[in-house]
Image 1: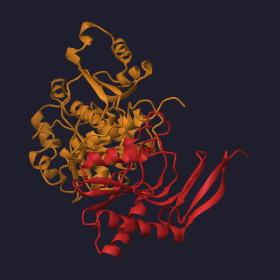
Image 2: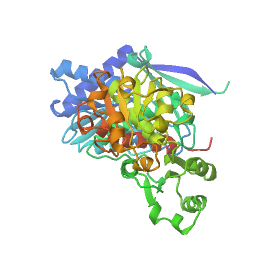
Image 3: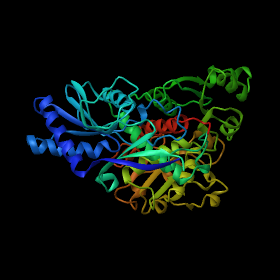
Image 4: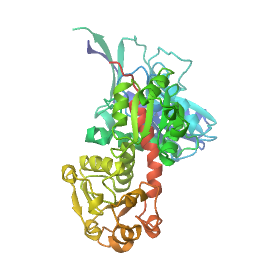
Length: 183
Length: 310
């Protein structure tokens, strides 16, 4: 099975616009950002969270705290997987209690990553609320989870792969849909 | 490397530098969990572990049990005097009986060298050696390396001086294998009667004189001196030992300024290490105990986290 390019759904410009729009929505929804903290989920949620922090600062002139979450130890598929994922470090150097926590990830798919992230966050403190911001919502949820802020809804089939590429990680900036096809 | 491709952790002799690196990296993530208010992750929920201690132990046993609790596994602990070993049951029978109850990992400390290898060959469960006779104590070696690595940022090209009873020490043996694999230079010092006959095979240099051995050292590790060794005539008196090989500030003046002082515990203060050093600014003895929990959490994750079937 090889992956073939099917379509490019976002480019550098539309990604930037989407993230800026989400920044405004976060401010509106939380009536300012005094009590807002950002949590990026490893790997691609982290650079997205850093950008969000920058956009929020540009608009509100305030740097919100930013934490990094590694959800490996909270996954529900550890027993099923043969290759164990490498555990990376969670770095949340502030208290989450009574904060509005905006969790940031690149793609929302089954919802299982977000379920793990919520469990991990609740082990770190008791937030006032947990909100979810994603660049892409591709559907196919397996859990009752939804995004509060989505850059783009991308209807996709389960056999397709949504690939987010970010400058900080991949040295390019785009979102592609890839199709699995047997050669 | 993503996974430890092994069922057991029996000794550092058979582990590669790449595997040690993975364990150290994973331990760093585990240490973060220990600093949380809620020190628990659900990773090993539903997995069962048996702690089988045929020799007395305080910190190793406590450390393994805490690591298991922090990872959410279920565990039972059996100690020598309360086990059916005293009723004449063989080790293999003991563990097979517990394995059938659903145990997937056995942590064992046993007075016989090689006992953990024997066990590993005879059960399906993962076996972690928590000290077997005079052979190895791999988790101690790993926690010592983790402590040094955290403090110095590397292991490569560091000089580590191990002082004391190398011959009977499983801690020394695991450290010798592990540290050298990671590129550290290891030298030893102590009474010649307490050196292993095959010291050359380890590729380490022996110094009769502790001051010389500690020259330029980044780490000085004092080993526990067991009183039984004197009774068997391997050295004349505790006082003489302390005089020549007790690690004191006077004997390590030629070591590096940012020297680390280590001891696997429990310490005989005033014999193999002076209180001044044990409690001084260079001492990382307590960090070693904290590292132990992190390293054991990492090992439990790496050995138990995935499936065994390909």
